[in-house]
Image (cartoon, rainbow, N blue to C red; front, side, top):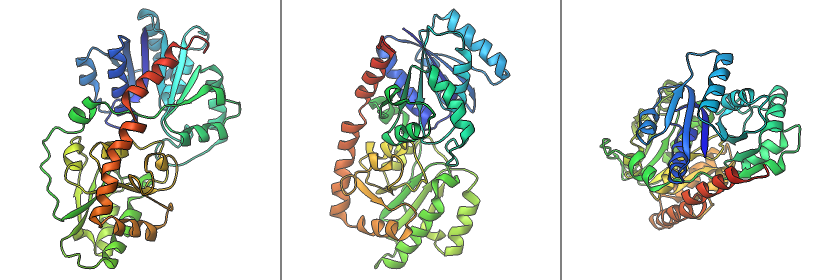
Length: 373
């Protein structure tokens, strides 16, 4: 079987990281893999080539030339399945397959948002629904990475796509956890005895300003906090300067440690105590699975797919979205060593049960091999 994966970038991000895991599993099943991407720093390119994957970047081509190149790749390599990830490549894949009904066309939806919102702003436009009408009519199967994504797609589609959607959670393999998350170059030791941590892009969607406010309120409420509690924020992005200024205005910046983006998040996870997420929406949130791989309890809002990952009072605490006081209370609860240890033990267990790598590979393979798509 020859599979062509289309993805917007090969940067280090949720969809891209997931694709590398998927590809490893597919190579084990003797599937020939080809990857085409459009832009970015190509973080994963050399790695993919090293494991025998053919990779091509299309940035220098215009849209119609891109279609022509993809068609040639399909023909020359006898592609059986085109599998598209992320909005732009769904459109490009659809356009490349116009007039070709023989090839299977699979798309994976990585976020509960429309074509124009991406992972930045929550949107739901009629134009996006019209675009999806054509794509969903042609596509053989839609893989939703969470039930939240599935519900969003069904609700906002002009046609009935229930039978075309299959929910398949991300799965992390041992190689990703052991080799891709940590290279042991980061020597990070928290200043505090108990460290709350956020890791991610510093963009509006992540609502890190609310997290900082919650931590500020935490410090006002907690007793005996001298050098005991700290907040680590790891990431880069357009919001960083504003967030630092905001923490200074609150008078809490001396309790916050700032680190730029690093690909060595495993070394960070080894040293922190509680992982914090506060997104306004998430398709699934791969970083939460990464935290669970290191047995960390998680605090997060009860929106999108976050409750599918965080089981309240089992492997973390969910709070009402936008409620900084409730988030503060969750932080206070997790200063209790026994409570935190219990949630930590459950975290890795739930990862292996609900976000199993072998299950993910098996379910995707079943879709590829389904004859009546």
